[in-house]
Image (tube, rainbow, N blue to C red; front, top):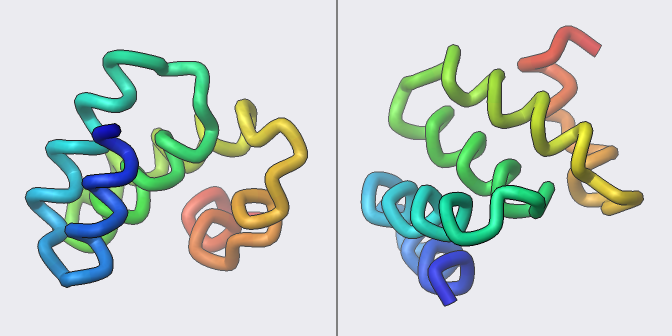
Length: 81
């Protein structure tokens, strides 16, 4: 639920609100690569690039074949790939 609400806010440009939802989703289920990816792109948008890089790393480890994550240019840029 929080991930879906976060995506809705992110699409509207409400990155800080989206980030709160993604943080909650991550606390509920930290095993989702998608949630960590969503946290990362939100942290990037609010200028917290170090935290974004950390979450991009976790997203990559937990991607489980998710092409959106594996092929992400922003993820690769943050991780120096």
